[in-house]
Image 1 (tube, protein in one colour):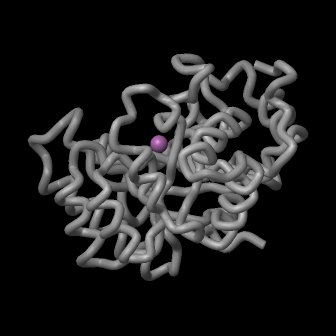
Image 2 (cartoon, rainbow, N blue to C red; image 1 turned 120 degrees about the horizontal axis):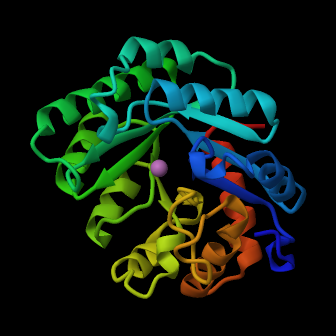
Length: 260
Ligand code: NI
């Protein structure tokens, strides 16, 4: 995990991580220290309910380069976490977004009205606090887009998996598109076409770690340092350099999350 090829010459800003995951329990502090020494200049670690949101805030307190997002993930709407709890956590000075929030019809699709309700309430909350949102959309492209068009929040659609047409609509709304390790997979069919059309100023890179490690680490525990492989692939698709992609996306992340 700490091999020499993970040393990065350019800044990496990982806009979507889950460092509270128990797969990091034995290595978290060493790992965060090593990747920060090797180019990772910023991380947004996301909550999915009250417990993980609090853990995200704690990490943000412990590490200057870590920022937190707090929210109720569509898979966690039965966790007992309330919108009021999220509101309270969101006032923390290192909370930079409401997320991850959204719709997931892949795992459960018999609670769509409840998912939509929790999603919309958190969008309203984000707008009230003037925070961006981090959107999870899995197998729910139509409803997600409709809700984004209705509320017009600031934010990012993370691990984008929609069509080029959907990407165009998201771009029209001025929202960012998060691209992760999936872009390096051979079966990422639509994603290269999406990556080609994202305007420079709306492109973000992310891991969703510990999940979705890019090739050549596919299937292993992912971490933010591996973003250089994702950026390399994006650069290849867009006909530019890894350096340009990493500099650009770090700048974009700071713009979206209002980090100086
Ligand atoms: Ni995630």
